[in-house]
Image (cartoon, rainbow, N blue to C red; front, side, top):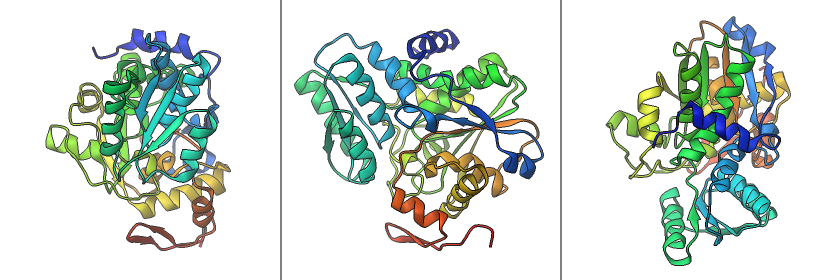
Length: 333
């Protein structure tokens, strides 16, 4: 069943004191750029460095079998599931593709989970997670297509609306849709007039392509500064696809150059270290792809990035992403 606002309130009780109440702070620079208050929900301040802890805690709390849990992940969901499983004292096996940065793999192992690296796509990792369910009796925690995960992510929308009920636009990073679905559902239940924009990179954006096609479709995964937004949405998607279809007012794509620049802006203007996936909301505004007509908020989703890559970006160096090179440019020049 689709989660509703009551499920989000229930999730808020589950995660209370562990993954809730992250700061919501203004960005003076972005506020000046768009002419309205521009707020940053700092999910990079979570204990695991990413918003995924909310949904993972809520979902793992609902697991009754003791054999353990598994998931496929581009990094942050796996870290959340590993953390939640450690708290419950159960086994966790995280399945990931070869495209996931080593820093994220190391972070998951540090939490005591087993990591299985398989294939070059999220679909390959998903197939391995499904095998573990069939053959070893583990319970799968989907990174986005799970009602408890979506309700957990929806607590972000609950907190933003409680702190700033005058918010008119939410700019939400969009990948498999668990975050966007949960936040949009919660925010619109509280304030139906609010505009929710899903934002992704312009290469390998699975939810965007699926929404265009009217059904889940596969996309080729490519390296991106916004690597957390990579991966498919699942061909049997039951929840996050229809919820994003019904609840998102718009989906916008930004380029790797847009993301590169927005990472610099967030660092130099707000002094925040964050993944490329976090800055797509800023990138959409800075590039003119989204106009803001009132108070706006975006979610700084995580900080678990490759610091060598980040250093290259903030110092204005070229960055190689697979067969693509982003030409460097120093901030302010």
